[in-house]
Amino acid sequence: MWNYKTPGIPDEFFERTEKVPITKEEVRTIQLSKARLNPGQTVFDVGCGSGSISIEAALQVENSGKVISIDYDPNAIELTKKNIEKFGVSNISVISGDAKEKIPKLGKADAIFIGGTGGDTKEIVELSQEKLKSGGRIVIGIILIETLYSVLSILEKLAFNSVDITQVTISKSKKTTKGTMLLARNPVTIISATKI
Image 1 (cartoon, rainbow, N blue to C red):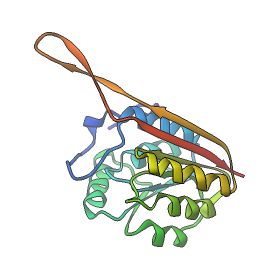
Image 2 (spheres, rainbow, N blue to C red):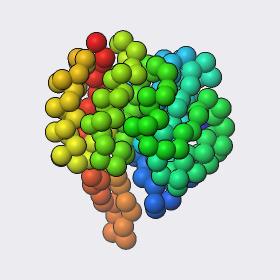
Image 3 (tube, helix red, strand yellow):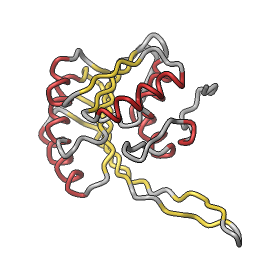
């Protein structure tokens, strides 16, 4: 389905529903670059939503690696499974349930993406730190200012260094009757860090 090594699968390639969010392709590309993935790695995608990051991460870690996608929303789980089938990837496991209960039962990861968490981001970052291998990367996509503050506060207390904060504001073209305009999307703050 996606015959390129580069990330950035167009959003319209994914199965979508109004009820389940998707990490937009440009933001997804930056998040993937911040994770610094390699073949053979293990990746968690917490709050997987549509599964777009899971799909792209699975392609990056190749068949020798694996991705574990977690979401508490049954609609997200169903949509992620549809996208796994659509893209024909076989190295993704999907887990339905509360990430705070599921993460402690998992093995170690080389990289962890944290997306929509229903307000539990701080606790999920703490749990993820315990599951990351030394040198592992955490990448957190944030929309709310309150979440940004709580994540930065907890990262200072945990065993992370090389903390990077990048805010992304994307505008996409839209044809109108008189020409082409650019429509701005909501800004997203991406925090990435390495476990000491």
